[in-house]
Length: 430
Ligand SMILES: C[S@@+](CC[C@H](N)C(=O)[O-])C[C@H]1O[C@@H](n2cnc3c(N)ncnc32)[C@H](O)[C@@H]1O
Image 1 (cartoon, rainbow, N blue to C red):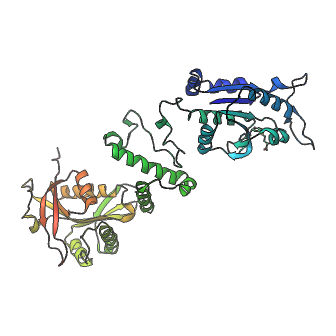
Image 2 (cartoon, protein in one colour):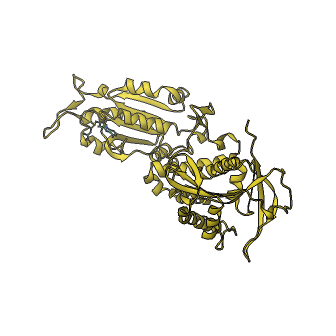
């Protein structure tokens, strides 16, 4: 790629473009960048390049003749090359990564013309320019900064300039999305850690996480790009559906605390149960698919002092029922066994409001449940869940619960009574 930049400030432009990555590529001969002084092509003694505008007005306009002579000179050195003459102008088409790709792909010689003052004589543009490009909807003093931006962004796409084409594939704007967030050492900085997924070495998970981050941050930071983006495959469509679902979700506005539920909490608890019921149905989990658990069940839980609501910033974000009464159904366990003979409590019914899913409220629920077990003087928590309830199983596993075997519950007629049993032994407090 050969780039000629026609400018009144060749030393400044050359100094910038002959630094770092592009400078090294120029040294290796992979790209050639020449900054040509327009003033050297004037035909007047004063080497004047501009003059007053016809019709009056402020400032001066660059004359066509020095520009044309300068252009003729660079074109005389570009025989056989696919050349493109570009005038950098606030009136041009907005410059994008797509334009950079096109210029790198379709041409091997770019002439970048930098205007100054009030601009250039319109007849030069009409006569000599193939296209006008703008760096954005604002006005610069001269075209140099825009020319450097075009030269830099085109050159880094030339094979051999960057170490690998993967360096630019997947970057912001490559396929209409912004790039995922990047992290480097140390793993913990100022109390902020690198996302866990990036340090566990599971490449498939990392790839999926990064693609979802690309979609999510484009949606958040550049809704215009997101609206125009077309999913490249089914995986993209799946991740986009997930983002839509998460869109209605809230962040926790404060720490999560818990307190015993009162009768007045029952309508909200039933609302959360109904959301959970619908979500379980979507996952084809045959749990809570009948009237259970209803208002009477919670009235009884409240009377026994075993129902608690979770709150954050004054909002009820979930509930749990922790019973200290032994569960007869847990006496017979198949495919495994309970680990301890310790007195235990049972986490019976628990759910987080749908708008707080994914906010950390579920993890807070488990922590509150553990705190309440300790209040009751118990270190062993048992819980059962439907074999298809993967979200609950994942939450339990990541919270330190262990799978112990299978049990049967008193399910309503026609519903699946099989459940997986989990247990967690809390550490003894020193
Ligand atoms: C002060 S500007 C002239 C603006 C011109 N009078 C107008 O209103 O369209 C001087 C030169 O800076 C360059 N320039 C200014 N804004 C630019 C932009 N957004 N993108 C690319 N080049 C720009 C052009 O080369 C232009 O000739």
